[in-house]
Image (cartoon, rainbow, N blue to C red; front, side, top):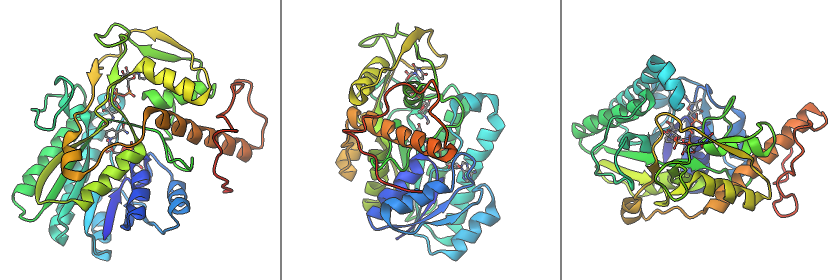
Length: 362
Ligand code: NAD
Ligand code: WQD
């Protein structure tokens, strides 16, 4: 089966390309590389030993999208392409509404025209707003506090309405919780540009000495240790969730939470990272970050019941794999610049003895 993966050069998309290819699907990627590099697709190829067909296009561009639909006999679309920084969406609402909503409309229009009936959409736990965790798919969605979240809720509604009038369509709305980690090869992972907003990439930057210390946003929440609770899920498990969806499609609209159903605090994540990798992560407690929830975690039992999917990897795997990827990136940058390690990089690198990197020469 041929699957069009929009945003396939990105963090979750690239891991999903690997999972799809490993499961026997053929992958066609459409990505404008606004937050990724084409090189990532080379790494995907290196992992799977299979070709990825790549189009560098913007998926809001109707003509460019139709070119792909007319060239390939597509069996389905997984739509990852989108802008995803919550705080940036507050500063640039129009860019977010345009990119994230128009792309959904352009792709679904092409699906209608070319008779492609399977559409999987990357939504987010953020659509639950201030509901009380654990979040269940049947909950009424509450307003989110930012345009990013609204683009997800609106895209969900658009796809639901389109599915209603298109018999035989299968629309799957996947609400991701907090994806972290990387492929165990260390070849693909998360590469945020600038100072990261999300916790795990921030931790790895502190671990490698690029940033001084982590700021923990609040320790006065009504949680186990006062810090925020989230449902961290290994990106490889998340990617495999997409394969489970394609393997178990039913007509109509289906919504699934992809999480672990387990809440982890910020301090628990820091400690696990330190223990798993033998590295200190200095931190200080600062004020709460505006807009943060105390608790956000899934009830992921529907995906288990209906798709036979559950997250298999644990928090230690997530921390190890995130650091393995970051360490490999460090080595690669050093090799490329052929320079001495900077003074700030004095912490031990990922335990070379117990965590061998893949022998890859780019
Ligand atoms: P990412 O930024 O790594 O990947 C998104 C990819 O889409 C990038 O490669 C980018 O270049 C591409 N892209 C963006 N706009 C495009 C456009 N108009 N045309 C073509 N390509 C475009 O992000 P990610 O973390 O892999 O997220 C993938 C999807 O999952 C996004 O829709 C995101 O909103 C959603 N999501 C992510 C998270 C998370 O924490 N990472 C959580 C919930 C939902
Ligand atoms: C996790 C926890 C912070 C950074 C965001 C989006 C959500 C989804 C995933 C796309 C919270 C704390 C964080 C730091 C900290 N993305 N934290 N210091 O906020 O759960 O979700 O990413 O859909 O829509 O909102 O993830 O990783 O930013 O925060 O203490 O430097 O870590 O307060 O408790 P979040 P996060």
